[in-house]
Image (cartoon, rainbow over all chains, first blue to last red; front, side, top):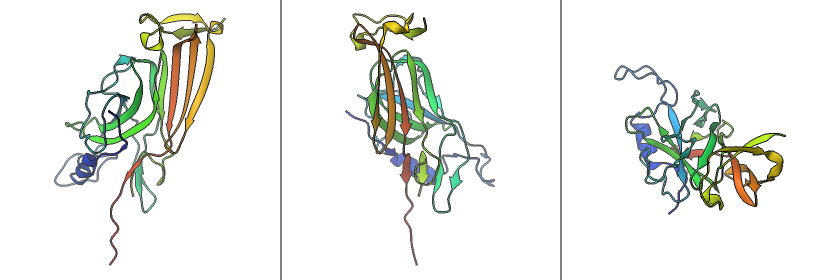
Length: 155
Length: 75
């Protein structure tokens, strides 16, 4: 089993159905949702199977269980969607850190998902080198928020 | 002497999982390393007692996020 990184296929559909709001939405006569959703990042074991092509929502299957980790993961700090004229992009304004974490086994994957959505719809899968953490912090540091490297980009 | 929080775990070769404990940092051996490729810059640090890990942290910097495209149409 392995985890595979990418924007989830499900995200592309949900984008067109207006199911994700990374920034407050424009006023709309059909809907009253004008506040941004809260995105979360959950951590998964190296032995899990979290794949961009099949992940549709947050799942506890393969999720890290450990001291200092709460199921569902940690929230990402909200920021406004930016654009450089050709690409639009979004990156959390702060790194996400799990403090005093002890991971039961190695982790190599983070699932970003929409915590506010009832379905907990999956956004993207990130993978990294397999890491263990013992009685210490684990940090996912955000990339530069621009059209080339931002965490989520529509190009 | 500076104290450091450690934990002995079976996954790190200890006979059983222990509780968090404080220990003099100078009793531990320290090492660090990194992973640097196109998608991440990761720095890890670990502290060992009797050759076995008792503390390990990792800082994973995502170099590049994920993108999805919209097909360009001309004409």
